[in-house]
Image 1 (cartoon, rainbow, N blue to C red):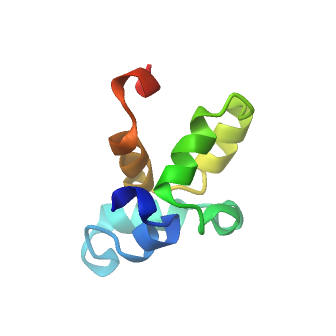
Image 2: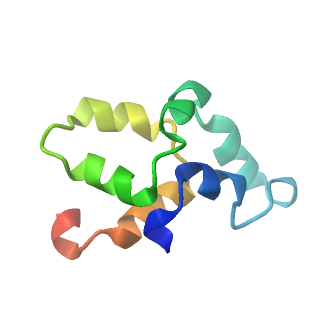
Length: 86
Protein backbone atom coordinates (compact mmCIF):
# COMPACT_ATOMS: atom_id res chain seq x y z
CA UNK A 1 0.00 0.00 0.00
CA UNK A 2 2.77 2.47 0.90
CA UNK A 3 4.46 1.99 -2.46
CA UNK A 4 1.29 3.04 -4.30
CA UNK A 5 0.79 6.33 -2.45
CA UNK A 6 1.69 9.45 -4.40
CA UNK A 7 3.93 12.12 -2.98
CA UNK A 8 0.87 14.39 -3.04
CA UNK A 9 -1.01 11.87 -0.86
CA UNK A 10 1.76 12.06 1.73
CA UNK A 11 1.97 15.85 1.66
CA UNK A 12 -1.79 16.35 1.81
CA UNK A 13 -2.14 13.95 4.75
CA UNK A 14 0.74 14.66 7.15
CA UNK A 15 1.12 12.49 10.23
CA UNK A 16 0.85 15.59 12.41
CA UNK A 17 -1.61 18.34 11.49
CA UNK A 18 -0.03 21.50 10.03
CA UNK A 19 -2.01 23.78 12.35
CA UNK A 20 -1.02 21.86 15.47
CA UNK A 21 2.73 21.40 15.02
CA UNK A 22 5.45 23.97 14.37
CA UNK A 23 7.91 21.38 12.99
CA UNK A 24 5.34 20.24 10.43
CA UNK A 25 4.76 23.86 9.42
CA UNK A 26 8.50 24.49 8.99
CA UNK A 27 8.91 21.35 6.86
CA UNK A 28 5.85 22.04 4.71
CA UNK A 29 6.72 25.72 4.26
CA UNK A 30 10.30 24.94 3.20
CA UNK A 31 9.29 22.65 0.31
CA UNK A 32 10.26 24.09 -3.07
CA UNK A 33 6.85 24.26 -4.75
CA UNK A 34 8.21 24.31 -8.31
CA UNK A 35 10.14 21.08 -7.77
CA UNK A 36 7.31 19.51 -5.75
CA UNK A 37 4.85 20.19 -8.58
CA UNK A 38 7.15 18.33 -10.98
CA UNK A 39 7.13 15.18 -8.83
CA UNK A 40 3.90 15.27 -6.81
CA UNK A 41 2.22 12.60 -8.94
CA UNK A 42 5.07 10.11 -8.56
CA UNK A 43 4.33 7.15 -6.33
CA UNK A 44 6.69 6.31 -3.49
CA UNK A 45 7.76 3.29 -5.53
CA UNK A 46 8.51 5.45 -8.57
CA UNK A 47 10.61 7.79 -6.44
CA UNK A 48 12.56 4.80 -5.10
CA UNK A 49 13.20 3.46 -8.60
CA UNK A 50 14.27 6.91 -9.81
CA UNK A 51 16.72 7.32 -6.90
CA UNK A 52 18.24 3.89 -7.54
CA UNK A 53 18.47 4.31 -11.31
CA UNK A 54 21.97 4.38 -12.78
CA UNK A 55 20.77 7.28 -14.94
CA UNK A 56 19.97 9.49 -11.93
CA UNK A 57 22.81 11.77 -10.86
CA UNK A 58 23.70 13.06 -7.42
CA UNK A 59 22.88 16.57 -8.60
CA UNK A 60 19.40 15.47 -9.68
CA UNK A 61 18.77 13.83 -6.31
CA UNK A 62 19.92 16.96 -4.47
CA UNK A 63 17.61 19.10 -6.59
CA UNK A 64 14.56 16.86 -6.11
CA UNK A 65 15.23 16.63 -2.37
CA UNK A 66 14.18 20.27 -2.05
CA UNK A 67 10.69 19.24 -3.18
CA UNK A 68 10.30 16.47 -0.60
CA UNK A 69 9.04 16.38 2.97
CA UNK A 70 10.58 14.19 5.65
CA UNK A 71 7.53 11.90 5.44
CA UNK A 72 8.22 11.29 1.74
CA UNK A 73 11.87 10.52 2.45
CA UNK A 74 10.90 8.16 5.28
CA UNK A 75 8.40 6.36 3.02
CA UNK A 76 11.07 5.75 0.37
CA UNK A 77 13.57 4.55 2.98
CA UNK A 78 10.93 2.16 4.34
CA UNK A 79 10.62 0.53 0.90
CA UNK A 80 14.36 0.14 0.41
CA UNK A 81 16.26 -2.98 1.35
CA UNK A 82 19.51 -2.85 3.30
CA UNK A 83 21.43 -3.24 0.03
CA UNK A 84 19.56 -0.28 -1.50
CA UNK A 85 20.59 1.90 1.43
CA UNK A 86 24.31 1.14 1.10
